[in-house]
Amino acid sequence: MKIALLGVNHNTAPIEVRERLAIPSGRLADATRSLLHQPGVHESMILSTCNRVELVTCHEDNTDLRRFLAEYFAISKQEIEPHLYEYSEREAVRHLFRVASSLDSMVVGEPQILGQVKESYTVAREVGAVQSTLEPLLQRAFTVARKVRRETQIGSTSVSIASVAVDLAQKIFGSLKGKTILLVGAGKMSELAARHLIAQGAGTLYVANRTRSRAQHLAEEFHGSVMDFDALAAQAHLADIVVTSTGSQEAVFTVKMGRDLLSRRKGRPMFFIDIAVPRDVEPAMNQIDGAFVYDIDDLQQVAAANLAERSKEAQAAERIVAREVDRYEQRLQTLDAVPTIRAMQVTAEAIREAELRRAQSRLAGLTAEQQQAVEALTRGLVNKFLHGPMAGVREAARDGDAETLDALRRAFVPQQEGESK
Image (cartoon, rainbow, N blue to C red; front, side):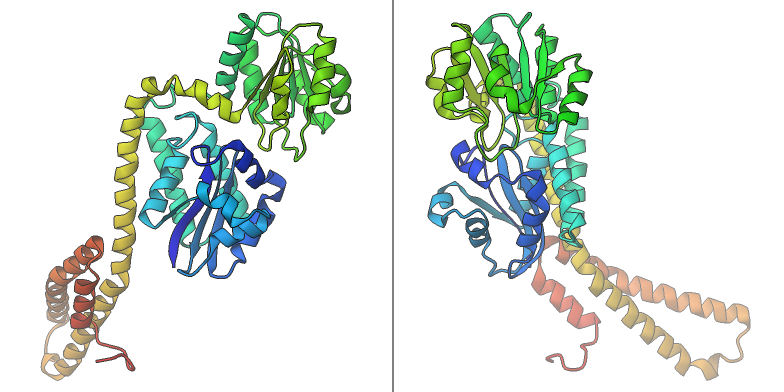
């Protein structure tokens, strides 16, 4: 079996492809179970965010993860193949560490990704898809991410998607003072966007959500008002800035709806920040006079402006990840040595005890103190004798030297009945 990772992200696939593969949180458990039940898959986790969909698995060599993607999402292999990346073993570990540490994010250093990986891990664990292989790997990924955050300043100079959106809003309106905001969807990203917008002077806030109680809670937090979700077509024109992230599989704002909204605004611009995948705003709305629509991929261009500022810290974080990948791999290889070392110790102890039993008649006249001395002497000899071979086993395992490891095992551990001589 091997550890493997297959996926697409914002670097390899445009939003048109990613939105076809996006898994709503309510379906993540079902998708993870489906992946786990694929032939050859022993453990699995699926990470699905606005910027990536990745399958992390422990599976047998002939497992076809590409077929699962094509069948589960009803998309042909030909359509998705150009956008896929696949890693196994060491490279899969490295990629997972980088993702958790926000080194593979659209906005390097953003803090949300670690929480998203943890949520995917929790779901996978609840459905029984994380066991003895992925459990320690994911726990280590969390530790590495915390270490990167603690030992570098990568987070202090980063910008979130929400703050990038605010930058765009300021370019369109000049000043955000007194502008009216409409949050459509009451998730974490919407909340972050609201905080940034209000911090820059935005005024009135409306919240629309299919679950009214959630909208009410968020509106109260920001001293705003609830707008009925079903009333968006009639009332959304009140907003200068619409931040939408609903998880809907259909467009919330269509081109026809957009024309009606802009007509009511009488020439005043309207800014849509669409951070949903699939998208909430039909892309063609950008063609309407006065409508400015930015989706998650558009925000990447603004984020790139801060790349130079973050590059030094990102390089330091990459070095940490590289060291941690080496340590993790060494740990796995050392674990391969444990059964052999244990077998060597059991064999040596059995030989020591057998020799003491054979010499029992000659040792019968010894005092209890003398017998203890003989016991200690023989144990010490065995330990000293095994020290070199055990060190050799550990070194061979660490270096991946299977031939030397096998030779030491054969030399110091008796073959079981039925093994080839």
